[in-house]
Image (cartoon, rainbow, N blue to C red; front, side):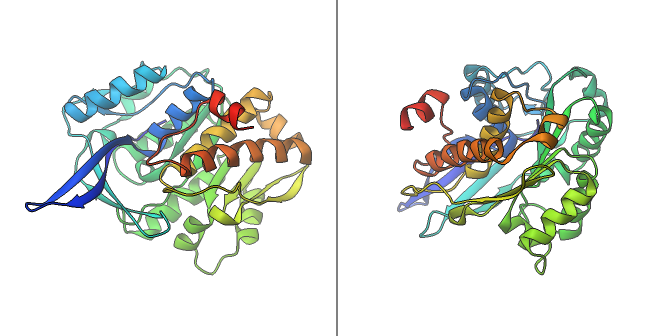
Length: 308
């Protein structure tokens, strides 16, 4: 898993500027934390800076129980993302930084990551930023057929505005992924004229075992070969903001599959509708809980069980 950054939320204007509320964040950073909070044992494969932000991120991951043996450190700075929220709590992201630590993961660093891991998750802009993108592709090639491969494009055009790069990454991953989790918003950003079901059909024909499309307040649509197409409504919640909701859903999806003994290609292909509905509902409840509080504050398994 890769990518991490510090996230700041504008709070209020002052006479001399803006007050900011800084939060740990970054898509697979959030996912690693989410997996740990849900009782899994994630290993984080991503570059961490030695600067003050990187030290804070490292401490946060260690405190959550995330294994950092495969996380190379560098003197490159940590990236900073400013999150602005609209009236519905929907975020817009502005990226600050260049040649930052998360992009400095290179081919020799692959030796840090064991080849016997059960699953590998990749996603977000590190799949389109070099040199880390080439490193992650080499990782996927190495683990394809050995580990379950999960991918969430998590498109951020404010960070990388060249749409074709995102399309190329997605098309490359379609033929190598066992699980694709993508938001309806990402599909529209990359393929404005493509329907959800048309994308799912393309993914399944490319060899994806489980395709999941999240639709925010409209719920989720998923499909496997055995279960077919399944649509579930969203879990209702008073939204504070939606930052980290997609990362939470993916963490809970993987954790739910792991707890059910289904974090394997063959198990995904054989999933029945009840099993698929159960894991999707679990992921939806987790995402809703994150939306009920500020920032990417992912729930613990105890919190989810208590809510149930």
